[in-house]
Length: 230
Image 1 (spheres, rainbow, N blue to C red):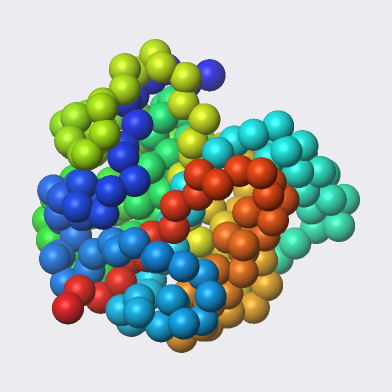
Image 2: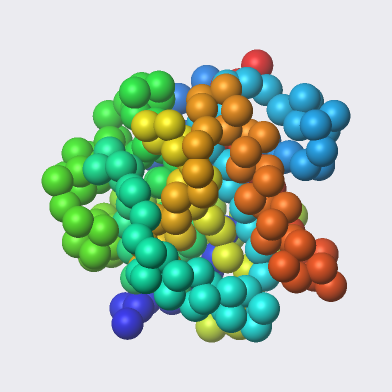
């Protein structure tokens, strides 16, 4: 049960990049909008890409598929690298923050964090399981307060914490040769098959397209990529 309900972060790269930099991510890495998922549009995204964020509506179609997918994986099993950093979501509307943490935490070999809240959190959380990591985040006021501050910024009207929010962030990352979907509300990471550092964006785009294809009447999807800054 979530102990607190936050105001959600807006899917705005300017806001999210400010949030990352507040937590110690260097400006040499930043989020950009992915304007289309076909090869021609993906070619405009700066490289390398370290993670892909998908914001999507949690419709009945999504919930039905989520339950089916979880059941199939529990029945058949899947391989998940022990090097994947995954955490559960306890705080309502914290999915944006958790998606960003997942993107950074699984790329600390590339992202050289400065001293700050993110570095401290990951150092403490790395030896914990996913449930303990989720609980630990609630006790990190530096990260939670940054979320609260940046949730008040953006181009749209700021919702209240008790407003109904149907959109949800997940992160797609590469780790040890596989593409993982990291969603703090799911029971475990989802292994979507082989990928590489170079093909992550293209392979993640296919997963995003699958989300869209399962709910073709829904248009409210947003895709961003954590990439090297110009």
